[in-house]
Length: 292
Image 1: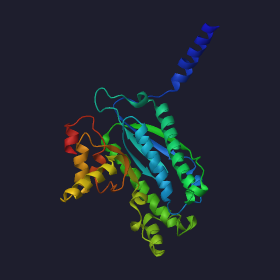
Image 2 (image 1 turned 180 degrees about the horizontal axis):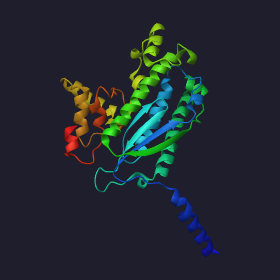
Image 3 (image 1 turned 45 degrees about the horizontal axis):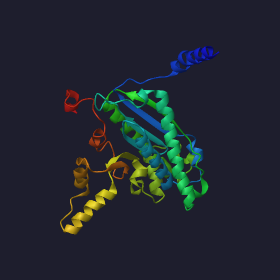
Image 4 (image 1 turned 60 degrees about the horizontal axis):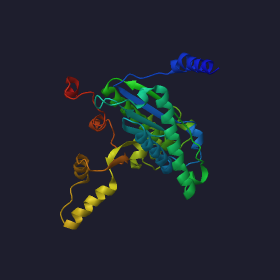
């Protein structure tokens, strides 16, 4: 009986379960996009044109994804979606997260985002001082998809595309605060800007996080930077710029870093080096890299 049971288990696993698994090639760029499921319904009733608490929940989910995914390089957050880049070619001993099994990557990233987002919602529930905290339950859900891109320039272009989409969405969301869906139907982005202007508002004055999305990346922890600044104050000498201080501390192996939202996320089409600098290369010194 035991032997028969083991043979049945083996047959079910080898002939059915394992044959449905898909593995990405090693030593490539793996992109993961996590999206809120039915968020049009879940977000109904929140502050418009954007809800700062909702953005905070999305940022929290993106940070947990970066923490939980081995090989994560950075994430881009906009609206109800998170795009994550992961690699496995830092050195010859680098291992792929779950051996690059697509099924595992998609199911676990969706689970991490769902858990982290709802924990943040629960925090607002306990405070019960905001619209999100008062009206929303921690029952949001996310789905996930993963794929590979072989070329780092196309990886860069993918994130440029997602930010362009974020900008377009933000204009639409702001215009929707002043006009109905029917009134905006068929209007170009320029026309929607005009709707906003005629209402006495200006899209350019709104937060960068709303207009262009945000990047989650490893950054020097703020408390350590403040401690360093206090030293300069105590010695009564001029402090270096925040940028140079962060660079110097990042170069120090002892400096503590953490995954954070980059509050100064630029427009990628205006600063290609920003996004390009976060994408690792398979090797340095090759002709393509030098030309770029």
